[in-house]
Length: 212
Image: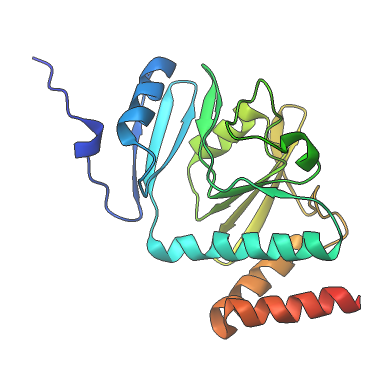
């Protein structure tokens, strides 16, 4: 006898995750519908494996701070950007993922007017940012979507992964910000925001960027 449990009935403790294997793309699509949009969990799917993650509240703050930093730097450089937050990105039969946050930078002009993300029409985001992710499925999903750059912030460290020859390699430099020491700069600014307050950190950062 097979017992079917509605996905909404599964409760995840903050900071935990579950993995479901051998899940078809159609089942993944149905599961997304069942979960609904108003939820605190994040999902990542890659070639039959689904991970559902429930982040700790304390892990939500770093990626929000990093997003503010990215915007401040881009504005200081006079560059266009579009923040697509935790939009669900899907490449049918292969991968689906909801970033903690993500940006269109190099391709910002190509997503103007976009209200329904379809990767057959639009490019993948130029930069995805994740906080406290240890899941291989998440990075695999970004690989399946062909996202060119992924930042993972964990334990006060930032790692940059660049898509190269069909795989991610860890890089000391960012594609989006090649002239900045991103792996050291971002953790310093995140800690400053937590210690001194985000608004004060951003004011000081903007002053510094303007004077350079």
